[in-house]
Length: 248
Length: 300
Image (cartoon, rainbow over all chains, first blue to last red; front, side, top):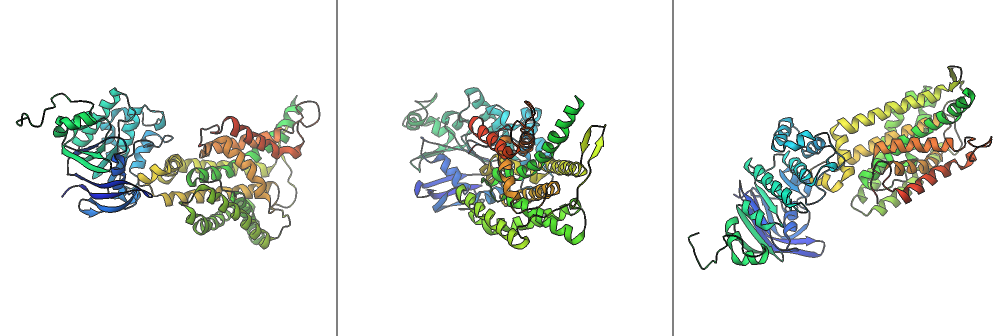
């Protein structure tokens, strides 16, 4: 059974329909990346999981349980954590307070988890008393992800974690995503930097106009000529003609 | 020289400090409801009035000192405010801000009318008689009631500071004041945070009303008169910033008192009748030149 499944999801904000039937599956232990042009509904698809828009069709299943149109605070309580693209930290709270807020719904002692997060993101430990709003872009993303991970989520949803970051930080964020994934959390990630994202992805989805366009493993999508031309800024290294060498 | 300093301290600085700390108590609640519920609560002044009347009634019933009945008056005010939230503000939770502002304006008029209906419009004395000031070092004159007011404010402020810094709900209040949307996505129980905000805001407002009544008297317009300086303190400190509200309250209180000191010649610099204008002038100046306030609050 997949950890998370969007089944022919249809919906949008108010009367504006953005998703016209999107299906995405994330299995246990996977990193799944959603790419596509601007306005394709990538971020909207993630928000659909989190009960942030009105779904008029289809289903969202978490480990088989129907969570379609469940309000965000309840989805969070079920162990789905969502890191929005912007405004994803509490700027006037200290780093440690941000992490504590991430654990708000936990009733047990979360101190061990706090130390695990600091081990995962050592720069945060040094700055744990500092107001999170004063950190650099990359460190803010660490706080945002650390905060989400405090719940030991069943799945982590990331909305364009590298948006607006310099290439140096981008690489840092992708390696953080890999680290988080290696620690056992499945990840569903929307990304603009498609090439880098697909490199760390187990599987990828290409959305166009609120519909699934292509689906494949990260490698398949990277090597597909058509996708390369459309979304990856020309053929990538090692991209092959599909009709050619099939033994890759 | 000592006369000069003595006058300044005894008749301007200490009253300014007393007034300022009362404003600060009111402003903490106003800034928190502003930051967390996203609306300017015009009924906040009436919450202060209500607290003063509850305390007055309790004093009449028990014969105790107003400070002794203060916790009970605070508790009663909190119950009323929680009831008002449930009945009048909760249905508007998802509505545009302006509807809540208007609702609170209506609530202000309703609460005031109810107070006038129950207790009458006559002025009442909280503490009868005149108190002799205590003289220290031959020149410092401070009345016992002023010492009591400042001590009570200090205790309440330390309690709020502890709550906001060390408790889970206090941190969640600051988080929600930063970003209500993210608080919701994080799974923070926003209704619990809203309830805590009303409880603290109402308790402090009631205390402000009682302490002002101890300093002056009880009347039905007292809260409304406090509303302007308290709004000024909130904006000066930065909306959503409780520590800013404390600083703002003290500055406004001091500025109001010091504005009538005879800085030039022997006449008051500003006729004491214009005290309220000082708060208003500071508020307008802040809104024009630094709308985020001293502590970088929110700008709407």
